Structures are given as structure tokens and as C-alpha cells.
Image (tube, rainbow, N blue to C red):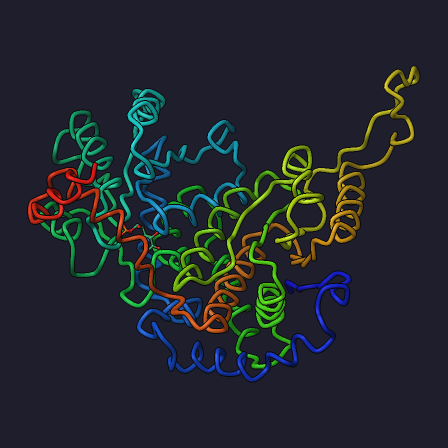
Length: 442
Ligand code: PA5
């Protein structure tokens, strides 16, 4: 079971920091378990690992099997909450080098998460003559980046296979009834999957949003859900034995003690996109009403040679949360070199994990001495089950954290502002007045 450890926290927080927060934590717990808080129409994710739609889950498995059998590439089109979870899980469980590996599952290309023409052209070239399918994901069905990318890749698909065969290669994940994507999907007869009404984008990785692309890579999504379900049971505990309570209490106490930045990291490059997923989850959930911890991320040890300087010596405004995963799958022992020209024979026979763990311990001590408090999130391993646990743990702790801050953890009014401006500047019908105002400013 995932655990949370606070390292030498008595140097930074009073011994009573967690018990002092108990009354607020109990209220937050009630909001999540009973739906009594702000944004309570978006807490479907709380029970999702057990209550998910089993018939749709079977369709996801069937579509993933079809994609594996008829496609060498899957273009996953989505942005923000409709993108980061799938990428985080696939990179972590399959490798950031997944596309380069020899395998009998399709390459995954992520599109619609930006507006760069060269990136799009490159993916089109990489797909080349390969058989491919598209999974377009947009809850609203109107987000510009994925909608534009979808138009390009839909045309590519139709040009290659003809309109009829292309229909069987498009999978649309969207709202069950509303939005342009849903109407288009229904009119064209594409296979569709639902983003539940009561699950917001950043909490949607364990819905079809994440599950279809993840399953297409062959990852066992039943194990992923089972891990999340086990953490869901753990999080029902309304006490400080609950790891999500421990983490939420620590980060809230550190925030109020003058640490407004949290740096999440791991000693594993495969974790990088999980930190991107986490940044969206916490940044969008907490950053409002002039409040919120700023979520940042690092990849150690690489960033110890760059951001390590600031963390050790810069403004004392941050704390770190390090995710540890235990033993690597590969055991790599440092070879003996008789000549010892590099002076490394003191490490001969030692494993890479041993060297990593000493780097981790040395950094923990150095940063703590440098007045950067450290929280350790310890996972049992790197399986889909372990990751399912971790995903639910971070989601639940995020809900508790938002309520401790007294914000609505489930809305994102700030994300809408740029979308409206972009629609207006692009000349979308209905935005004429705003367009004139904005152009006058520019
Ligand atoms: O969390 C969110 O709501 C956002 O990041 C959205 O997921 C993102 O803007 C994409 O929206 P949509 O799925 O409607 O295209």
C-alpha cells in the first residue's frame, strides 16, 4: 500500500500541525464522501473505481483489441485533462521510448495538445503508409486545438481508406449528449465513449478518456482500476491514518507556514508525464481566488544539475514531494574495470538502484538542511495496480486540499478566459463584439 512520510518535519512545522487541522479535514472528507461541498456535481470520480460503467469498459477493451489488430499507429487527439493522464500512464508503464520499442501494439502519437504545424507534419510523416486509427477526446467537443488537429487527421484517414472504412477507425470520447463532436460522431456513426457529466477533465484518466489509449498499448486496465479501487476504500477512512489526509495536511500546513510552491519529482524519467498530469490536477484545482500552492516538477537526478542549485540555495519558498517506487525491473551492476582509469572501482558490483538510492538520501539530507521540507510518497512498485493506487491517492488528496483552501476544487474559470479571447480573435461567429474590443487593445 502506498504510504506518505514526512522527513524531519519537526524542523518546519509544529508537532500538532495535523491534529490542528482535524476539524477542517473532517469537513472536507464529508464534502467528498457525501457531496456537501462546492462543485459537488463534479465528484463522480470519488466512486468511479467501483461504480464505472462495466458495459462501456468491455467496449473499451474490445475497441483497444481492434486497434491493436488493425493499426500500427493510434493518433490520440486531446489537450489538458483529455490528454495528460493517458500520456502519463503510458510513459510510466510502457516507457517514454514506447514508440521506439519492438512490439505488436500500435505506436501512440499525441496530437491536438498544441498548435504547432511542424509537430503535426512530423507525426503525419512518421505514420507514413502505416495503418492507423484516431481516438479524438474532448469533453466539451469544442476545444480548438483538438478540433483543428482532428480535422487534419480525419482527412488523412479518409484520403487513405475512403469515407466508409475511415468510419471504423475513428473513436470519439466526449460528452454523452452535447457538443459538436458528439453530433458529428452520431451523424457519422463512429464508435463513441462517454466522459461522465460528473467527472471533470483533470479527474478523468480512469474513464474512457485515459482507458482507451492506455488499453491500446496492452496495459492491463483492470489492474489499474483495481489499484484505484483499493485506494478508494483506504480513503473512506476519515482519520489521519488515511494517506491522502496525511499528504493534504502536510502540504496545507507548509503552505500556511510560507511555502507556496510544491515541487513534485521522482528519480525515474518515465515519471515525467505523471508530474505533468499532477501539475494540472493541483494547479487547476487549487489556483483560484488569489490562493493555491504553485505546482512545479523536477526529474532527478537530471535536474539536480540544473534546478538543484535553486532548490538548495534560492528563495526559501518551496517544499518537495518525492515519489519513490522501489526496485527497478532491471538489475544493472557496475562492471569492474581492472585499469580503473575513471576511479569508479569503489562502485564495482554495486547496482544502479543502490547508487540511485544513495543519491536520493544525499539529496534528501542536503535539501532538508537547505530548509526545503520533504514529503515522501512511497509506492510498492511500478505495476498498473500501484499506479492506480497512486492516481486515486493524488486525486483524493487534491479534493481534500481544495476544501482546506476553501476553494471549489472542481471548476476552472481561469481556463475559459483564453479560450474566449482566442475564439474572438479567430473570428468565430458570435464573438464579434469581443473581437473588436480585443483588436483595439492589440
Ligand atoms: O481540466 C480541464 O477541464 C481542461 O484541462 C480540459 O480538459 C481541456 O481544456 C480540454 O477540454 P475538452 O476535453 O473539453 O476539450
